[in-house]
Image 1 (cartoon, one colour):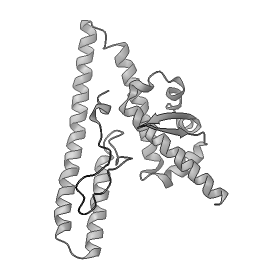
Image 2 (cartoon, helix red, strand yellow; image 1 turned 180 degrees about the vertical axis):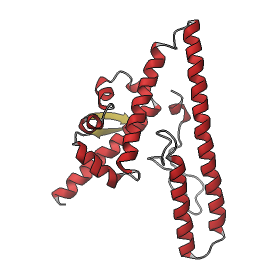
Image 3 (tube, one colour; image 1 turned 90 degrees about the vertical axis):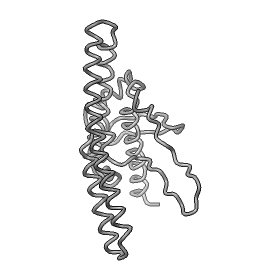
Image 4 (cartoon, rainbow, N blue to C red; image 1 turned 60 degrees about the horizontal axis):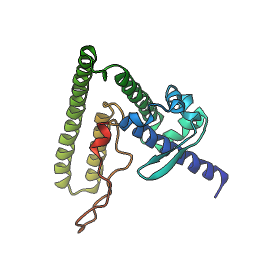
Amino acid sequence: MSKVKIAYEKNAKSLQALRDLLHLVVRQPARFAENTELLKALNSQGGVASLELSFEDDGETKTKERMSVNTLKAHSENVFERGFEGLDALRKGASDAIQTFNARKTSSNKRTKIGLAKRTEELEAQLEHHQKINMVLLQGLSIAISELRTIRQSVKPAVLEKRAKDAVETLLALLSINPPPFDGPSPNPLPMIEEGATETHGKVADMEDYRK
């Protein structure tokens, strides 16, 4: 294996670890709220590029290694479907998640009239925010169902490929409206069900991750 390929695979693995870390931070900000190294890194593109960190995710140890900003940007375009733009949006989402958690912990959690009023405002804002997310996702499901019905009636391979491509592009565009991590496909999609199979062994999303 050439040195160029070895370097590419090393950077790609590190970027995938970074992507998984950012998703984890968005889901569980409390877990990382006091990690000063990570907090500082999330403030800038250069920060996450130079970040060196190992963490546990779903029973597996993953490592983000240090790299230059140019390497981060260049390889992101090849590794991720939404390229560097999607990864940077996820970085900002992770930073916001920790900042929101810390602000809530220091203000609205106090059992005072002012603190409870502040907490109520936050919950109302979160509810409205997730209602908007749900609306976008419902639109995506409606489009997917419609396209699947149309594809089922098509017989020409070229037509099938064109309709499938258009449907995927439309769904990705809808998802991109949402904030991270709801702005793109899951990094760990469920496996395809083989014909005749009676069960799958894919990991089902734990909604408790999003409630912490």
